[in-house]
Length: 118
Image (cartoon, rainbow, N blue to C red; front, side, top):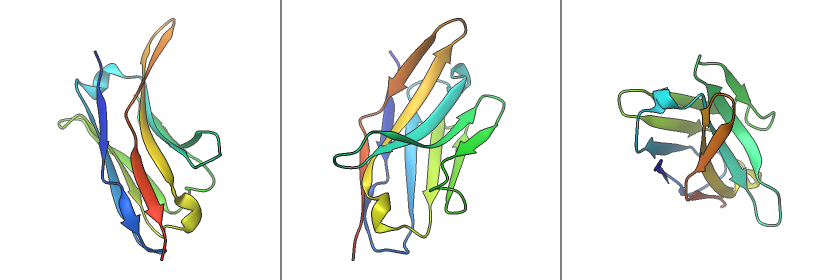
C-alpha cells in the first residue's frame, strides 16, 4: 500500500517561506506523476504544481514565480518550496501521486496545514 506523508506546514507571516515535504513509502520512480494540491476552507481542491516522470513540471498561475517543486529520488521525497507567501495561500496542502498505464491509481497524503497570517 502506498503511503504519502506530508510535513513542513505551519504558521508564517506574509512574505515568508515554507518548504513542504512529501515522503513516499516506496520508490517515486513507480509513479508517472506527482503533485501538490491545496484546499482552502469552503473551496475546492486545486492543483498547485505537478511533475511527471520525465521531469516535466506544471504550475498553477498563482504559484508561478513563487513556488518551486523538486524531488529527491534517493529519498523518495517530493518538495514544494514556497516563497513570498500570501494570506490567500492559506490552505491544507496535499501530496498526490499517480501510478498506472492503461488505468490510473491515485494516492493522497493526509495533508499539512499552511497558514499565512500576521
